[in-house]
Image (cartoon, rainbow, N blue to C red):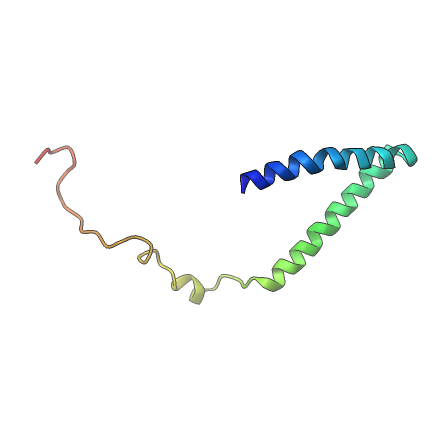
Length: 86
């Protein structure tokens, strides 16, 4: 997953700066900054709305189905101290 992140940042960041630079030359730096902020807000809003409809909230019923005991194998505990050496 980190490789995908590095690829996206390494490839798309320079391309995005070239595109933003060309738009800033045609308009203004203020317009590009405001436009990219509005675009980011719109993308985040769409992602939030899509995820909100897709995932279900955590309730007492769903939380009690996994209590952690299924995650680790059953082990017996000893009363012996690890420093006792016996």
